[in-house]
Image 1 (cartoon, helix red, strand yellow):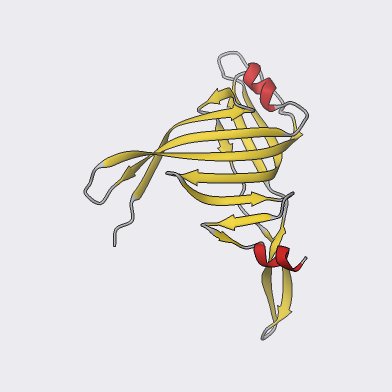
Image 2 (tube, rainbow, N blue to C red; image 1 turned 180 degrees about the horizontal axis):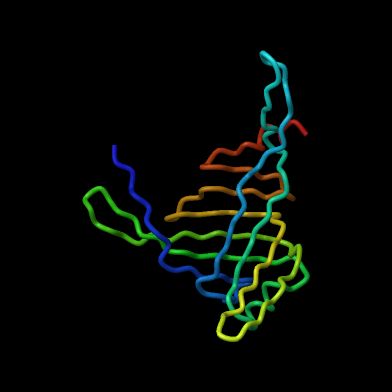
Length: 167
């Protein structure tokens, strides 16, 4: 069985509320970290509490001070869309470009400090708390988590349905 080999990201754009705010910005999307509890099983064993998550933080690093930097640092809930293209090596040896997207609703936790130095680009890192994140790759949904609506879906499996149905 052949799995396509995913290559490097070759381009990326960032949008906030539908407006382009940057190209080739660095974004770190959060993973899912579950709260845990200890149970007795030949001593202590920690198990995840599916449906209860630690805070989800996202970071954006943008080069330069411009309108885009101002747009992503507004002190209100923000709606981001990130698009990136990665190379994929197929089983026959051909290389194909594949598109991915992430839709993120987030609230800024802090605005960045700005270091200004002659001969160097200004780099600004902003941190956000994520309330909703949905990621697609090549048209397929990889993940959807909406903390305010009770959605937790990974690779097509909804892990919060059973909990919701009992409430």
